Length: 177
View 1 (cartoon, rainbow, N blue to C red):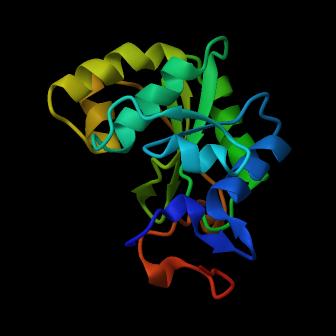
View 2 (cartoon, rainbow, N blue to C red; view 1 turned 30 degrees about the horizontal axis):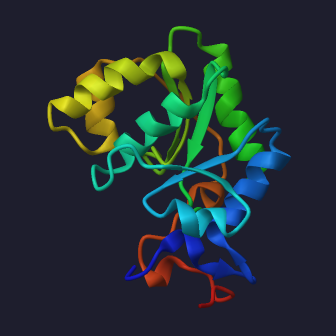
């Protein structure tokens, strides 16, 4: 993208703030942004924690988020670059994990693809994820497979709620900056 995706405004609001607002509407008790630049995120009024393994990929960020989630058994971890974050999709993802007590993670499947940037995790998965990272795995799906975690698929979520911005062409016309 050539710049920090979290800070790209859509309709005048940085993407990370749009995601945080959707999490609050979905009923989050606490929203914490994990990132390499916590000062930039904090300047937006977000509670932040630095990425525990900068440059190690999204799976490492998930481990950081799970470690930070003190008392919560289930933690929703979503990307900062969701174009149209949906509180309903977030709630549906959490509900699937709550309904599957043997699963470590619930993740939407859309268009045949697992959408790891929008998943609910049990905190108890953190040690296995950490051990899998030590093997050199980096992609979330690979780390989950290496950790041997049980995954519950989440069906029926509007694909628009899962769309993220990986390239400038993924941004809607109202994106600026």
